[in-house]
Image 1 (cartoon, rainbow, N blue to C red):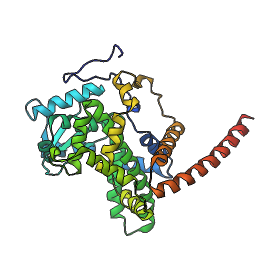
Image 2: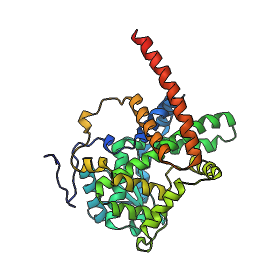
Image 3: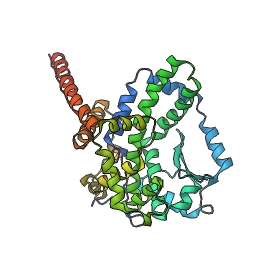
Image 4: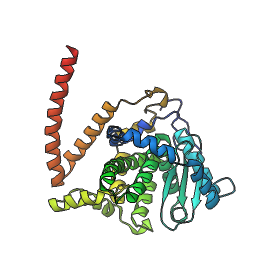
Length: 341
């Protein structure tokens, strides 16, 4: 373990200077790279930034919810400081708002803050709450709030413009790309939450509760995880099409599936290496990410997912994807050789 690794107040490893690349899902970065290549995306970012009022969002949180501090939800205040220390972040504000549903979100572009519902705070254990706050701080460190805010605004705009099919169609393409990115971003931040808590069992309990297991003690974990395997391995192509239909409009991965994904990462050599101090540092990050490398990583991740899936439609897409990738590679090589000459 490297010398700059320290132990936090809850006896967990800290990660000075950790880069979000350490925990980001490769498809998260790749989807953002793809998104930036969507025609008109740059103009949309500029327009959304122009009418988004972050100050108003912060004032509304201040006026309508409880700001966490030493004298208000002190247990959450300790957790937010611990998570920020673990990921080496400035400590963001956290607000608790009245809602019986289990919910948490990161809001804002310039000074992101976190909102958690009373339903979540009342239901979850101390360790599970650490995982949730760590997840949200992953969004802060990765800068996800900018694009999430844009997604929320565009969905509202899409609904408002539904009477103009041409305009709505253009927005729908960007919204669909944003949703695909955000589903993968959620997987990234589940990993950040695990790095903060370093307790895969507590993370799993939190995700079981999101899925409907109000009392995790009444849930059989092997049976719960088998649900994810069963979902991934449907044999009827009609089910495959239904999966595509249902997932298109979701902003988050399905709870059971994402729980299995995180447990898989918790058992990986990649996670163990980070705990041992072997992770990329922010100081080593290039000023601008190489989007070509991000796309390659995303393609590799998709291919590995396809190859391991028993879903018949996924296997069809895999065969088609490999053929397209092979052809694209030959074309790219031809252009590369031509430019070199």
